[in-house]
Length: 316
Image (cartoon, rainbow, N blue to C red; front, side, top):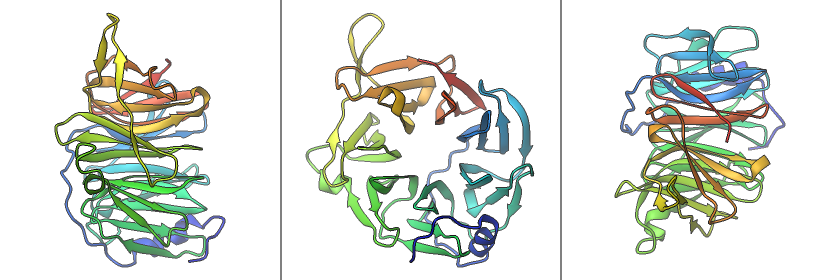
């Protein structure tokens, strides 16, 4: 596959949704109402989730919304000035700048869990271990990988395109044609506890994968090249000055370059800051008990969103 510099979104999207179906392995459904994805947009943000697309202010207030009675969205991405949203049962929405999102039937029951951009391509991860790749010529190709789990998070950057599954697998590609698969649980059997991943982020010099161990403990692993992974402790000093360990499950991760730290969005309104200093982790509790499902940074503001349409800025 020749790598292009961009693509014509609507033509590509129509090729994709009218193309081959994707085999689906059902994942455990998330039936909690609220937001599951967020992305920056001009002076504010766009969030999506269990019932539609919401346009938000920098502080999380709803400006307007487009709701759907039978659509559940899991991910968002901007392709130039066009918004692309995807979700359960292969649902796809497109919204060119200034227009309302319109649903396009995909003809597949595969749940699309995540979206990222890499080398001018849109990359989507689905249930059943399929990666969908679109280019500027209006061509989408599905690559079904030999995975045990569903691809739940993708991230692209200078170190490659990475994805993780809910069965503890890490996938990586430099060209979106050839994919390496690491079964983390099998490879590190006896060294690290088995886990299911929930998020991945490719920073400039490091890749982070977050998740939950089989005992339910939050876990975070770091790598500089994808071959060797090092466990990062999620310990911190609590408000009484006592050592403590993060208990809340991480749902999403980003890297805040300005402060050189990874940020984890977790259950019960918890945010975990993980900087390069291994003894400098910090835990922050936002004013909510809802699970935080996604976070993004835009124009100097970090916004976290989650269950029950929670949307809160992070200023720590």
